[in-house]
Length: 317
Image (cartoon, rainbow, N blue to C red):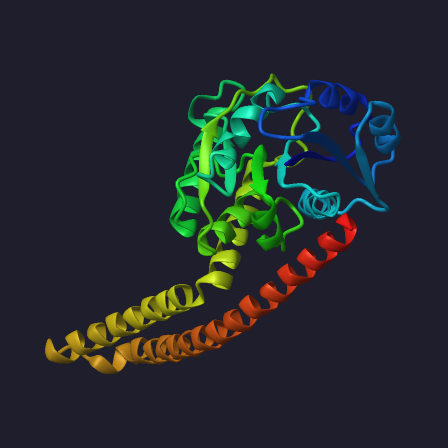
């Protein structure tokens, strides 16, 4: 069994050596523990600093592509070098490296395919009250969308089996955390969570510079990924709301007629109701089309998984 600990890094030359030094070099249950740094187009020599610090593998992207792309590149590289389990952590040492063993324990026991480290965001002292509330609300929404019970959905400290890593895809550029959880839930993977420790922040977050923007982007991602995997509930739900709005306007017009008031002055209600009914029909048809597309997407994903298996097998040979 081989464990590969991957670190996406962007301009992390001052931090990468310390981050690598803290990671375990051996763990019970694994014959080998290796490290992999993905330099996401850094301009400060992060890749060279990682090599000098003893990283087992270094992958350098020619330009900065974002955390989600770098994470997926690291997953693919880890698969190519024969990883049986992959742990993802951050270069800013937010997560306690000593908890890697606790993170992979449910996988070694056969209880989970994906394990997410729970930072205890509800009581995390270095988070502002607004950020704690946002994290808790976002995690609740993700639990409903994914069908998983992960209390800290945005945690990047997580472990994946080889098979789970092959089956996950990333469409966002910003972050992979929420997107992959929703995918895992809809693909019926076994997802677990374990409490982990964190270290004091060494620099401001580059991912969440403005909470409002982060919430909007992640909200859009949740809606998009949910519609991708469960199009019928999303589109049919929207159609139902539009139809109810149209019925309410028709009922309003009918009340004016029955109450002997002048209905001619309220014809705009019928016009708006007609628009809402047409929009409801469009949403309904769009839901049917999206459902057919989702079936095609599922088949394409199986082809991608087969290609990844073939590529990783060739790399091992």
